Image 1 (cartoon, rainbow, N blue to C red):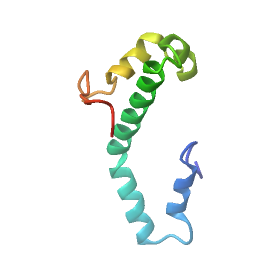
Image 2: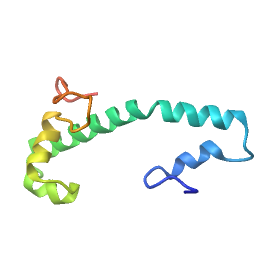
Image 3: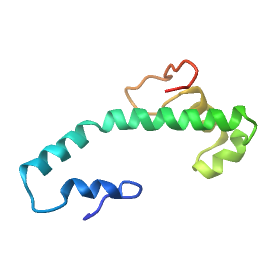
Image 4: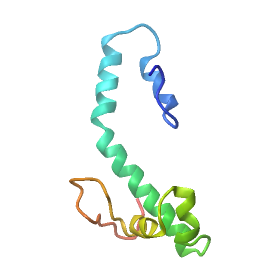
Length: 98
């Protein structure tokens, strides 16, 4: 694979130019930050799903096919439940704000 998958195409800037140690350092830092990125993405998704539902813009049933999951999973996302191993069954988040 020569380029990162969507939506991460901009990460290719980490390897722009000739190969050098700074690229290796930047790539190592990016790899080490993946757990934090996953946490941030999950929290943002939870916030968006909760906001859409709470404002009456979309039901979990309407969101489900768009997200490629079942309505029960959308409800779990809104509650902060994670299917990721080692993350527990529920994440706590006060009001959903970051």
